[in-house]
Every structure is written in structure tokens, then in C-alpha cells.
Length: 286
Ligand code: PAF
Image (cartoon, rainbow, N blue to C red):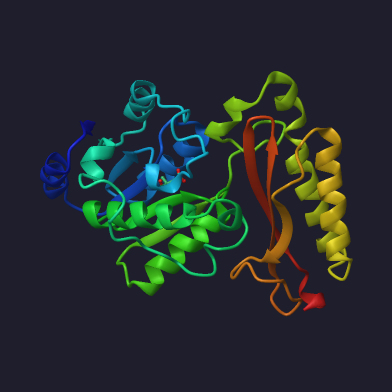
């Protein structure tokens, strides 16, 4: 496995690879969720490239860019066991040598302005910009992303479609702890008491899923309010959102389009947790 820090070395190593290439973009601090993406990459291609880069462009001024866990040595030790070919772990200066103020940015309108985008101004433009830069640098055939970041995945798919980027985007199911909490690097911001109540998020999303799949005509705003109350009762702040949407557009869902998703983001102590559950409206209701 080559661990590479510069674009020049990346070009040399990339040029030597033959066959299909799969890319797994990450911000490091790898857990079993990331490793499932790498496993999928390995099954989808001849070579696997993992990027590790905590991208300052996607963090707001009050967010956790400085505190974000950086564990490169452990990450590389884990990747060594997955037959990853290349780890690309550049510095901020390597990827943004001119700084970030005047660079070309990618903006995926509408999808980037709602839900997480409404509370994290500029976040998704920062994500789309770094992801396109990585796509252009690495020229992979496919890239693997987790469905936990559901809105991010839709935005990347839209960017790739709109800009005719020649890459296949593969989404992978969310990996969870035994009690249902979605794996996330930010879970380590939870105290042990908060960690015990954190799976309530998964629980309420599942209740909503079950209720809507049993009766798609039930009162959606009432369900959303109930879920927010449940979270507040166990110690979450009032959620940034807990909302049921069309899984393709993130618009208000309609019975005629049976793929829905319930998405939530809520703070628990120092951690902002996000999660989602897909909802399949029975055919008879459509
Ligand atoms: O999901 C993430 O870890 C990041 O948003 C990504 C896609 C690696 C871009 O920095």
C-alpha cells in the first residue's frame, strides 16, 4: 500500500495502475462504516484508492474543523489489512495552495440549500468542490459513499449527472452499532450518558418508517412533531430537522412516488448526529 501526500506522487502512482479503479473519499478516523465502503470498492474494481482529507472548505467558522479527530497512523494500519492500493492523504496546502477564498466552487442548487444545507451554510458547496477535485485528480471508474450522509449522496449524484463526470457513484447502507446508532466519527464527542440515549434517534426513525409503511395516509406533520418530542425528552436539543421526504428529490413526498425517506439531524451534547431510514410505500397506496 502506497501512502501518498502530494499530487505529483499521486499522478505517478495512478498512472501505473491498470484496470478499474474505485475511490473511497473520507475524512479519516476510519470505523467499520468506512471499512464497508472500502470492502465494496475492493469488490467493484481492480484497484482501490482511499483519500483521507479533513476538508476545511466544508466546515463553518463555528464548526469542529480543528477538533475533528485526525488518526492517520491508525487509519493506514486499518487500510493495510483491506488491500487498499493507495492512500492519498494530502495537506490542506497541497490541495488548496492558493488558499480557499478565490477558488472555483461547485454549487448544486436547491438540494444544497435545504435540511443540513439550511443550518450549515456553504457546507455542501465545500463537499461538492472537494469531491469534484478528487474525482479529477484520481480519475476513478467508481466512487463509494455511505447512505448515512443521504443528502450528500444525492448532491454528489446530481453534480455527476449535471457535469457529465465520467464516474459511477455507489451508495452503501449505513453501518450501525448493536443498539442501532449509526457509526460516525462524531459519536466520540458523546459522553457515556449521551451515548446510552443516542440510539433513540434510530428508534424514532424506525417508528416513523413502520407507521408510514403500515398506513401511508397517516398525518405526517403529527409524526414529525411526535418524533422531535421523543428526542427532546431524552436530552437531544430541538432537532435541526426530522422530516419525511421524497427519497429522490427531497421534496414533500407523494403517494404516487413510493420511495420516501425520513431524515433527521439533532444535537446531543457536543455531537450533531444525523441519520435516515428509507420508507417503501406499499404499491396499493400509490
Ligand atoms: O463524507 C465525508 O466524509 C466527506 O464529506 C467527504 C465526502 C469525504 C468530502 O470531504
